[in-house]
Image 1 (spheres, rainbow, N blue to C red):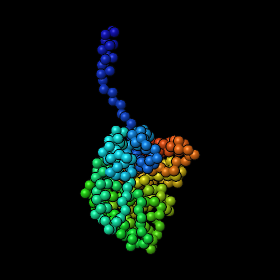
Image 2 (image 1 turned 30 degrees about the horizontal axis):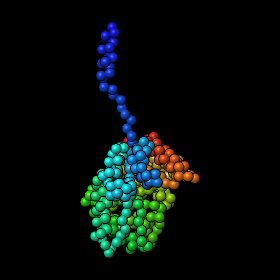
Image 3 (image 1 turned 45 degrees about the vertical axis):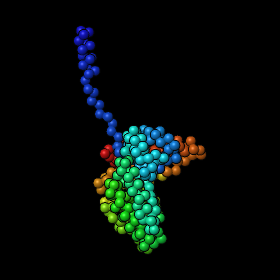
Image 4 (image 1 turned 30 degrees about the vertical axis):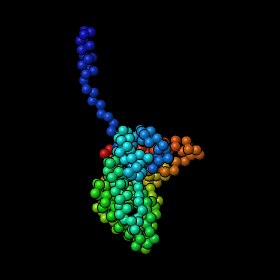
Length: 284
């Protein structure tokens, strides 16, 4: 009897155990959210992954936080983080266009090494009138066309001031209508769009093919203010056929650096948890 029992136990141990692992959602973080605590890049990226993020949007290219593109990607790979995009910008210089484009080539080469899809300009001097704004749009078209050679699409990230009216035109809408859809997309920051007096969902419906990324932002922790209808935003974004979004958090409160860092990381983790547990955020 004892021998039979040992045989049964051995068979049970040898059997494959089919346990369905909990799959994380594809939740991104703009690393500006934690840039003040990136002295140890390896340790901070681990904390990002531990908080529940699987995607990051970095700052700069080809160098990120003092590392070259390949070394930074290796650390992200180590922690299971894919790099979707970066925030970076190079100003216009009509007297040295070749030099400017050479700089952009290095940016795009770095992003290609990192496996990114997008390069997002986080803000730009948009001139004083529509003539100057049109020149900016033309510049974005040229840079975006160059980016396509590397498999990278150029985007623009808004704040609230892009919704001001200039010569009868909403600046942000003018930019959409005067940039090439094949070369330039828009990363809508839903918080700043709301602060600018606009409805993110209405814009997602109005420009379904131009808004390819979202910055998910709130007063601090995502979902806590109750001011932004994230469910409606995500549903329309998915309906448009897109899925790339990143959380951005700013302004952790506190009287000391240690207190601010603690609240910063706590907020980053709470935002990831809110999105992970929200049924309207898809897994893939």
